[in-house]
Image 1: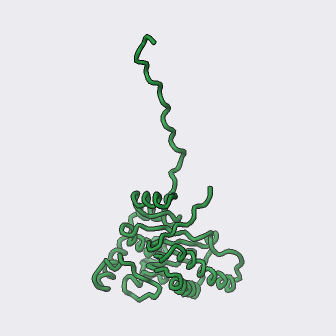
Image 2 (image 1 turned 180 degrees about the vertical axis):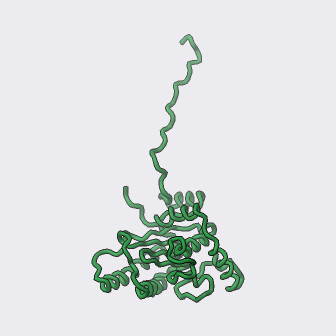
Length: 241
């Protein structure tokens, strides 16, 4: 089956996910994380992509971002790769591809799911056993959102600003949200969409996008389509015929 083209909608938030080829490490020390973030900051500015949240782990990149146009996300990720991959290969004597295929991008129904995606992304180190608390993990945007530091890479989304009228109110509100563990069913829902590049939204949002774009935006249901019931012959109303 032909691979669907990546779905990118300008001015709509997207969750971007990319990992190392065969889950190999893509960051080995603090200078690798810092180098990637520096190039990401330059590329986001150059290609007009607002980065709302991010998380880098040894093997994976997670971003929450809004592009200004259809080409911005792809150009940003390509530009970062063109700088980071040669850097990594030279430093570690690595050859060949670093990434496992193309990056995934999930369009997000913002009012319903955006802040949930913030929490999903920034609490991942705790779920993965990388840190006891989100605040203890250094390579994410969590510190920015709780007021521990100002991160020049991050552009706050209006929905984050709606958490309070002052920075203190927003940070306190978000900190309280982040301290609430996500229910397993919500994590499973987000895993199924965000790590595979499907649209994250309710049924009406998905249906609207599918009709507007004339393409599939969610996984097809498993199994063969159900056959229609065989037509039964109509009874003869005249028994003499």
